[in-house]
Length: 114
Length: 112
Image 1 (cartoon, each protein chain N blue to C red):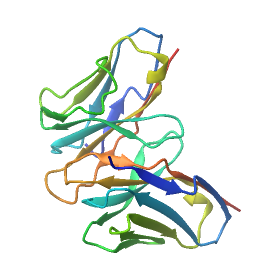
Image 2: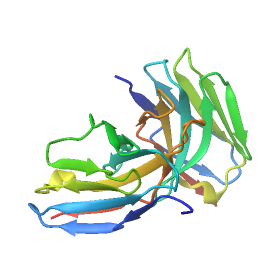
Image 3: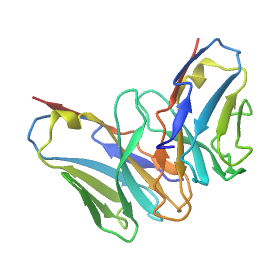
Image 4: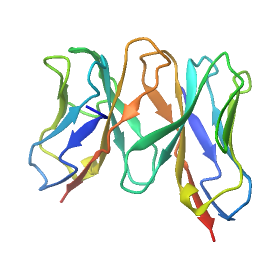
């Protein structure tokens, strides 16, 4: 595709519900990143995939957060038993092999937990 | 742990002014530094990327400089326009496929 796409763009969940956020990276990009951006803050790293391998999940805030990329393309970030502090914008980015390391970001999913 | 700081947090200038946004980072062992723009409710748009071996990059009215040894970067915007109003984020990367560490951003408003 032309860019990174994310769905849904907006998600409202009741506390305790599970949510799944989807990211479609740029075709051919092997690296995929998830970031969490709280209101008024810069994005913070959650996890990183190279193809289907999750190489770094050090930023995931708790075991309620889980990410997968089973075929090395589309990725899903799942949050179980959502809490109010999970309310944020979740950004996905992808980058190609080699090159300058430029990451291309999607529009984000705004999650609101009531 | 890498920490990135941006000053000022917010800035309001009249149209036509030149301005400078500042970014500092604590660990000088970086691979590159990127400046992004974020419009309200939107994702991030990459403006400029400076490799660690470079001193500056230019794109149109934008010029970014990097002093790796002192842990500083600046983004210079010439002849500001109302369309430049956005949040500007600085981020550093330690490897070609590593995570970005972001600052908290500078919210810029350019008034008519």
